[in-house]
Length: 547
Ligand code: FAD
Image 1: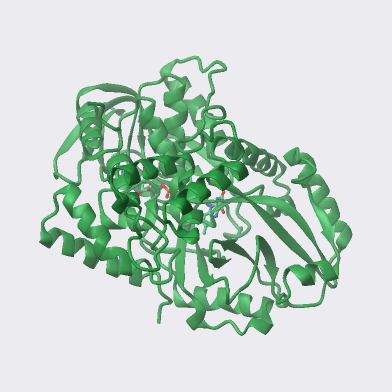
Image 2: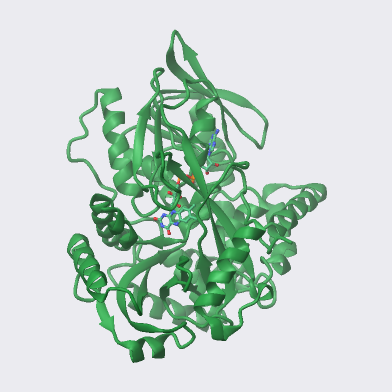
């Protein structure tokens, strides 16, 4: 029997291999940076392993604004290179993950007193840098057209520029990179932190990793180790190597989620309040989220939550930008906060600090990748690989395949996403799945919907909803356990299904069913199951508006 690399057995096998074999490259951290790097390296033929302390996308990679975007804002800082790279990268991600990188028409209102010429020049330059097709390129909308699109937007606006960006599910994009790396031969494991670097005579000789499910620790031998632990990068270096040359300056970003019937919007819109406070609002499914704050942060790095001051600040901006809607604190369904692993630049505020990335080599030989964006994870991996190759004395050549091989779920059998969606939706509706659920499943899983349908062929129960009104089916839990390495209730509710943030009650009405399905497959006792439910309730409460 073939063992799926992301099944519980596959995870145990991966950890067993890590304890026994020697690797060209060991990656610490299963965010988008580490997962993307693992996929890049294994597709080039290197022997790679990856360990993640909690779960794939446990950190910032599930707490972003979920945009695959060109970063037009950075043009204002003259960051032409970053804009070019991000803007072009959108096309690549769209081609390898057409099921997960969805077009998002983005409006930039031009308010009275702002220079239309400045906007036009900026977007003209952006289109050139992006190599935009006529469909992606910008167009100008007059006041009436803008009013028709977003009637609730504050005035006076003299029109808007509309152009094309993309929205994704950051956690699943990360998971799919890690899974793809494993499918190409890399042992990959979550719930397995690096606990110590092993250094002998000033040289990094290995690392000690612990399996959180058994408590056992073991050494992993690798010729090169990359620290891809995002906001934890500096903390990680304190586990046995010389601390970094520059400090990381985490900044916290907070988002608020509203029901779309309280904040009606299609696509996305850049916001600017009369006081000059800037942000955006983005439609996803039945919700619209508004973000974001950007404040220097000094608290703990695990599970940052939205603080009341930031929530009220973002809410005030939304109220000022949509004055007729009467938005209130009580309309907020969820909040989330993420930490940007920015590289400190003296004299610059978090918002003005560049999103560029850097690779540092410690005297012991540890490579640390710091900074960056979700959108640019592939070129970042490329840059890290140059350092890795130098360490290994390996010729990278032109052996770069991450732009060609689709991510899991991204192979749509030669059709475009519109045709694929139409056909899959029809099939799902025919099986009795509600339109809302079918829409969500197709958007998140792409071609892996077939795996859910195959479960439905075995037993129609797998296509039943997790609870009344919850747009997710039971088969998703089975898929998450057997093929996506979900090992805890929160792994499923947050990073596999997105129900923690994108549902009316943080998915709490589904928790009983999900925890029972997980307990059955993962061998949890009733006590274990209740502890998982308790932990989830606490985590879910952290996504409410703090009092
Ligand atoms: P992380 O995702 O934080 O991953 C680091 C991982 O390392 C974690 O999973 C952690 O558990 C693991 N780890 C830590 N210590 C250990 C250890 N000892 N052993 C093993 N594993 C360990 N970018 C965009 O392109 N588009 C956006 O819309 C966007 N919006 C953003 C909005 C906000 C509010 C923020 C904060 C960032 C945003 N970004 C965006 C940037 C982007 O999200 C980040 O650059 C990216 O997710 C960072 O990924 P990472 O893998 O480097 O870090």
